Image 1 (spheres, rainbow, N blue to C red):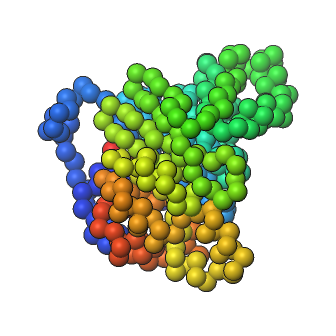
Image 2: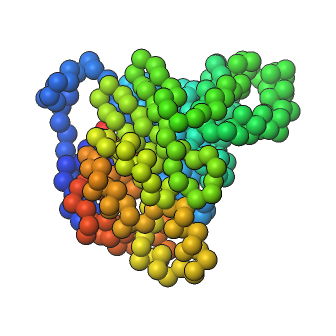
Image 3: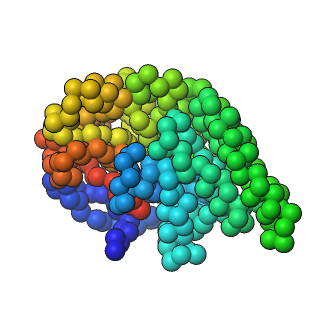
Length: 315
């Protein structure tokens, strides 16, 4: 069984890193009462049904407030695994607290968990509508999901099961590049990325009182990633193995060069942006090992890099 660890990255040692703890009171300029940001990888997988990696989804928590990015399959159960109700350490990930979410694009591996995000937290007690920010098409997708589950919703509302009439509802916000969200502890900026011919694909820059976190979404290398990832504390970026890519057929090579980012390309991006920590997710190995993939990056980039796994916590 995998044990979840809180990772505070200090030194990269060819794929391993030291775990250290810096007390809040010893951090320059930060008081113990100030905001604490955590990044949690709920799912790091791809469209491939790898049983060890759930679908693509990330949570950022600031104090007790969670923000969900992408809705891969399994996301609510992964969040629940880290909640106190199931023996976990993060109260913000109680399912009923999942109320604000952001979607990079409408590909199925990023959205098949969307009905779960709408309905399960409601069943578990969420008593206000889910707020969702995503590209053009998210409104229609939401309407179709609610239509598909209308009998379930109706039965829970008007049967003997106690259920509120708010938590199943969804407020959708179709986004364009720019600042798309702001509250007392979070600002979110969306920027377009190059996911082949997919018409509306975004990355996000999250700004909290103590962290700047950039998430690439699915993308080939593009100028916007370099612009928005500069000065980031954490860059979470998709990647595929260059060595594995070279074994692929010409048809698949053409596809992946237009839609995704190789280890060699990501090394160049990291050199230009210099994040304090680079987290790899949505990884395509194609027969290479994780260690080999990591080496492909660290041969060309000397910053801190880790391979993300489901239920990893970074703070």
